[in-house]
Length: 243
Ligand SMILES: C[C@@H](N)C(=O)N[C@H](C)C(=O)O
Ligand SMILES: [Zn+2]
Image (cartoon, rainbow, N blue to C red; front, side, top):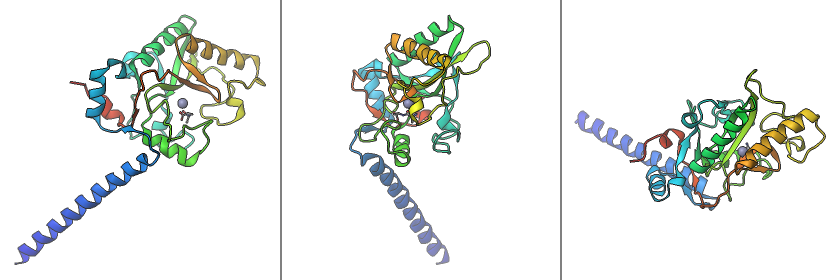
């Protein structure tokens, strides 16, 4: 008898666990879907898209560009949210194949001049953009989730230049994610050396097909010419081979 009651209690507990877990998932989906953007959040849908169009492949950047420096700020608490936004340990980041190849050409060209790239962020799951927007509702600095960000599509990259001799970042006048006028591309009340450094980043990125964002010197994006989908797929899942 006692055994039977214990069994029933365990079954009840299990059912409650399944109910609340499932409820949690639904709550999360509703949350990211409330902005009305179509979001790909399952790996098999992404794999099917890559099979239909190989330009949609999310290329892991450390493999393609081992000489680039990485300081993935949203994988640490050193960012404007003051908390980790990516599940630890996130060491790898991604761009769609054409953007990744173009970035390789940028790195090569800078290398010939004694410089290299440092990447702060590239692919960003859509749910992270939603969290950003909840804190900073300013489209100059954070993408509106009703449109989605180039980062969510694997088309945008936040980056700077380092001097290969010293390993130091070039002086760009402000730090990364400095959401003020002085970070704008058109802001000219800056020392000549800073303007020259920003110009070097801009001309090299533009030469290889990227467009600068007017309000952030570090943000560049690749044309969304294939209607690249907004993704909300974890970094670890994207590393799984496509069969
Ligand atoms: C949050 C910042 N690093 C950034 O990437 N801003 C642009 C506008 C974006 O969210 O797409
Ligand atoms: Zn950006």
